Image (cartoon, rainbow over all chains, first blue to last red; front, side, top):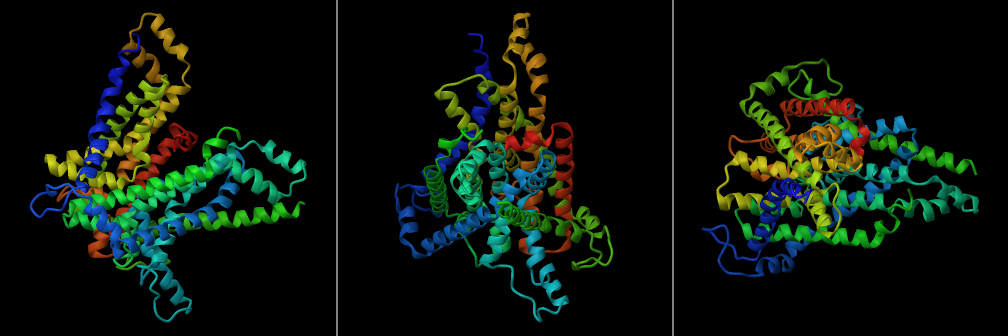
Length: 283
Length: 267
């Protein structure tokens, strides 16, 4: 009875999320189940054809495969670079660690379009890298660095790397050092200690970092367009193109293919690393 | 035994240096380029000049986009934080299945691919005929609300419940307790949430990409379309530096007022 008034607190935020988050996504799914139309937003008949066309068309499958390939490379690099960096940051004294975390957080707050533009300014034909190399007489003609899949990988990887570092550093900082001491006291080598104690205990950080990096890679239309150019299109570019061509059911179906990839990856991460299993035990 | 850790830590130090360089250099380059005196960016710059900032504020499109981004961020951060605070206060002392479902729902926009939200909202707006600014504002509220929710929830859960009980047992009604006891105690969380929602709105791309319209464009989208259709000119560096400068200002405020530790936990 005393807390009955609290239900009034719930109504406005819940209404916002239901009307402008849940309803539009459900509506988008409904539209994805309809045929296209030239005069209306979507046709009248219910059909699974949009999904069938995506799954049956080699063009779409190539794009999906390219999207997953680039996401996998970005994820691998983020993990390979991010883990040692997180380890370094986690071992810093508290004050320095705070400064390092602040330095990692700040770029995440700058708009991604600005960070992508930084890579354009570095990699374009008259960009910093090309002019520096030709000033040093290392190249005769400017290199085509921009508008390549590698440029997309490098730019997106560095844009998303702080998420991975912060996620892993947070779990490593919270890790109870006595586990490591116990392993070493029992005769485990540093490598064995790392593989059998540190790495499994930091898996929740790896899982949340990997999820953030993967999900944000799937959505990164602006970075992919600016750095990858028209030839390095990914799934998200196709969604955008379908919207600008007013092919709503096609755009909707592609969006749900992207969402399915996101959900599948989330499921794989949770099953593989089972972050819940070790959560809390390392604190 | 001692040699292996030192080799390892040297490697980790090197990786850290490379990583920080890769993360920070593209942002620094943009700021340096903005102060170029020439038509094209030379590195190192021969002199420093403000001409591209003058040009930026002289372009109606750019100035308009900047003003709209600030208005949008102020309005959406305020709405998102108020609603996020409501949700957090409701859920702070509640357990059970319903509370868990609601909690997941309130943080869902954080992990949901925002590009899909953008498409879905555009489709809904086209169907119901939503005005451009209102639609953009509501989208930014949805994207910003989880930040306010999470920071306030952390503050509210850390609160000693006996303080609220004391207020109520001394005869204060629920509203008086909220305003005189709870809010003064959780305000750092509220402020941190607001600043976060502001920053997220000010840099937001994936929903704004679909929801901006002619004459109603945010600064990040204006930068994006300028880069796509007019190429990378230095006025973009100035526009980007204005974006960065505002973020630096806000981060300084966060660090002074609430401290950086709260933010890492909020993420």
